[in-house]
Structure formats: C-alpha cells, structure tokens
Length: 250
Image (cartoon, rainbow, N blue to C red; front, side):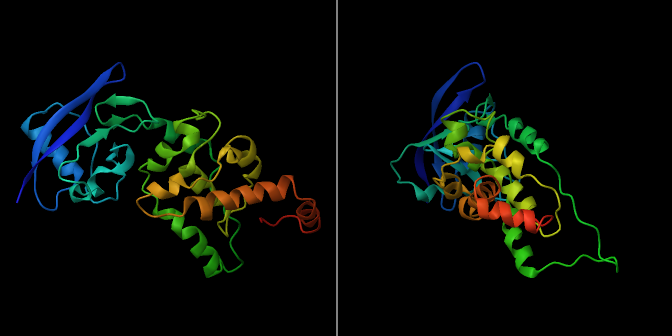
C-alpha cells in the first residue's frame, strides 16, 4: 500500500537556493533515498544527490533529514508520521555544490595533516607481536565509513566555525587509531594539543549520536586523547614517569 508523502527539498548551488515542495507515493520498506530517486524520476530530473552503495557502507548519501544529519539510504520513511513533512537539506557544515550535494574536500585536507603510521622494527624472527587487547582497542575505529556526519554535527565546526583550529571528530578518531596502535612509534601528542584542537571539544557526544556505525567516538577516542594531552603537559607525576621510563608510548 502506498501513501502520498510531502517533501521539502533544498534546491540551489553555492550562490543561492531555496526549499522546493514535492509529493510522491511512498510504499512499504522505502527509505528517504528511495523517495528522492523517485522524485528525481517523476518531477526533478536535474536534482543532484550523492549516493553509491545504498547499503549504509559508502557514506556518500549524507544529508540532513528534518534537521538531523543522517544517511539517506538508512533513514526509513516509516520512522516519520504519515502527515509529517520530510525536509531534506545538504550538510550545513560544508559548502554546497548543488542541491543535496556538499563539498567535503575540507575533510581530505585534514587527513593529509596527520602524521602517518610509523611501525616499529620487526622482531628478530621477522614477525610483529601484539597483545589481542591492544588490537581490539583500535579495531572499532576502523569501522568508520567517512560519511562525515560526525563532522557535520560537531558544534565546533558547525556553529563556532573553527574548522581552521579543529580537525573534527572523524580525524580525532583517526589520531586515536594511530596513537593507540601497539606498533606505532610516532608521537602526535604535541600536534593533537596545538594543531588539531583537542581542547576545543567539550565532549557533548553529538558526534557519537549520529555515527551510523555506532563508534563510541567520544568515550573511546576523543577523551583518551584529551587524557594523553593532560598527562603530557599538566600532570607532574606523569612527567616524572616519562623521565624515568622514556621511549614508551602511553
């Protein structure tokens, strides 16, 4: 059984734009991306929307649905009341290319700033040895699909517009995956404090709330990095410990 649903979709480019009303028949099991495609085929053939896998794994179809950052392909129409207007906008934190497509290239530039993985030398037999618990700790971070919903909802980037000072939660997670890796030898703590802006995050967990992979961005990534910065620069006991046992990553 299908129902006629009302949509408000932002149409425009980087110069200007406005919300445009559409109606389409929505059937059982449809997601927002299905409805957008249907509107494209029926009445808006020139409407731009980015998508790829339609399975919640490529991170391409990130938009804002009724003001909430979501993957359009994973947002079910039956999550909304039948008489509710569905508002679709591009991600607020990034420049618009056209319609629902945002320019996320800023994120790629942040990634290039991060000091890459620097593994220690292999053991004498040519192998690496690690504790399973150390591997488990960083494995969660590898689930990131780079949808940038966390970047979009981060108040430091979205509201305070401090994108020059803070790399955002996605790249705090990348930093955590490197800093916590049992084989990595690089020291990124000074940059995490001074260049990547760890102190700007006030741990509201808004990034964690929108993550489609349910990564505990704040608790397991950002807070541990904040603690390492505090240990390095503000804790006299940890300062003494490093002097006595230098060479080990904390």
